[in-house]
Length: 240
Ligand SMILES: [Zn+2]
Image (cartoon, rainbow, N blue to C red; front, top):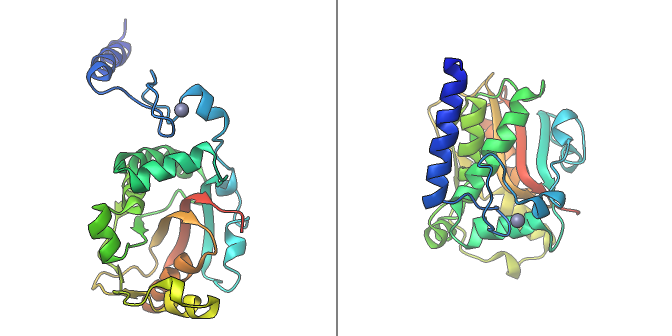
């Protein structure tokens, strides 16, 4: 037995012991699973296939940003299906205090992105910041956990001190669509002495729906760093 295979067996043994006390669970249905490298149980896995959007420079994701000519590429890990397994995982991540789901998703996706020619040079990862009120309520930013996982497997650095969110006094529901877009445009600002020009930066969020949030984050980033090499990634992409 080589040293390497001995080490692997030792690791597997350690992993099994750890699994007794802290069982690996499916990120969607929370059933116990044996393989720590998997995200889902077998049943959920069938309904949670990862998209291949990261292999195409222009795709369903980048189509959401026709005016953002500086966007190099963008991708989402899953297609969002209402009532599906991914939605279930996202709900646990956002509302049930399961921040580690974000990290596990990021770790998994990061390995794929690192192998893709489009994303292999990413140096910095910026999660879309949450409203301070929401952050206080939830206790964590789910996109930041996704970013942490991605950063670990892509050998990149998470940057949370560049884009900030303004305090929003009026709620979005009181506004019409145009006002919402305008409101979103003013929701973020950039403040940092760090220079991101010519750096490969991945902006991440949990879900892409209209694209208004990522669009305004990208705009404030590009205003401050016109030469930033900008990419985007989300856990899921909606249908609209
Ligand atoms: Zn499951």
